[in-house]
Image 1 (cartoon, rainbow, N blue to C red):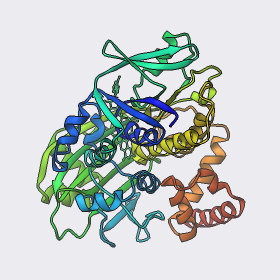
Image 2: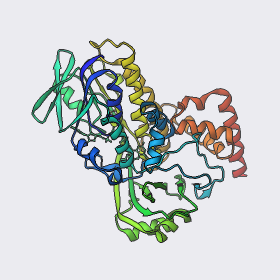
Image 3: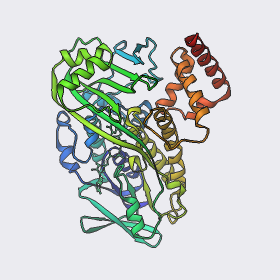
Length: 447
Ligand SMILES: Cc1cc2nc3c(=O)[nH]c(=O)nc-3n(C[C@H](O)[C@H](O)[C@H](O)COP(=O)(O)OP(=O)(O)OC[C@H]3O[C@@H](n4cnc5c(N)ncnc54)[C@H](O)[C@@H]3O)c2cc1C
């Protein structure tokens, strides 16, 4: 045991998984959360619904295979339990994938054999149940307002006017984290923030899913290009015999809450499966919209001075364009980095530099995948990484090759599902092969 009491700020996915890790190293773990987690934990799973602290819970949430691996690692038996409770692993042959309007028979399903699909509140409720079921984790409802210090180390948290002592603190308060302000108030520098304006617009609706549906999951990606509008849509099966269906647009292309307009988009802007669900399945509840202005990352690793006994995790470190489904998986990989740090006999009188170094690897990987794709959108104007044109050219060819070649498809799938680092695509033998296949295809298309 390294700590008497460790405190986690924020009890969403990042905070819950961080609390699970800390429970191996602290006599007591306290989660401070604005919403009442204890009351939510007492509700049946069938009542799981989006809560005020996580408004994005209304929207489609995909869990990548790498995140699923981490969940099973931290909570053995999680997959079986989730499936028994109503999460879905769609039967073979019920998935469809469209790229620029073309149905791909060899859908780049990635290497994962096991899928776990549910609504976001359902998944969070399952994780919450496992976390709060641990004897040394408790939760209190309240708003964290700042940190307490003992010299260069954090010594506690201020919550709704009261002080709570802590030997270690994790900030998991999400993308609007105020940690930087709290640090500045105590003369520590703020972590530098990078933003990429993406202006993403989501609209999601739920539908009843008939038991005999031929298609359970469908994803459609329309890439930007001359005369083409970038749009992504998807529907996935969720607990309670329902589908959750997303249509999205960028910038001024903004789906509204109007159900007729939503149906029109499904019918006119996307492959026929979307129109079929929207016009034949019974809609449950309202269309709910969500706007995300930017992707952002806070570069803690660049700070020269930072308090000891303090880390940040999840969206409080980096939050990406959600269409790539990286957020929850990143949070779980941050928890893995925290576990590594705490198991490594850390010098707790010094900042958790090795933790932030590991987190940077995860953030860089997700950032590279999501921002490289977003820079192709006409309204996104940077910041551009070094060597942007060359990387863009190579990734275009690799992606084309992945649509036709299983070996390339496998590797791309591992990277986009965060099972492998993007540097796996730059491995010389793989790169030469993928570029040759991609160039052959684009040459054939041009001819
Ligand atoms: C539209 C949309 C779609 C998404 N789709 C996906 C997807 O498909 N796949 C995926 O993996 N990710 C997706 N994400 C990202 C995902 O929602 C987050 O990455 C994930 O929730 C982990 O975030 P977090 O726990 O760090 O923060 P959040 O989930 O934002 O939670 C922050 C928590 O901190 C609490 N809090 C905040 N301030 C305080 C305070 N001062 N005191 C106490 N508590 C506080 C909040 O109440 C909340 O519970 C999506 C995001 C959006 C916006």
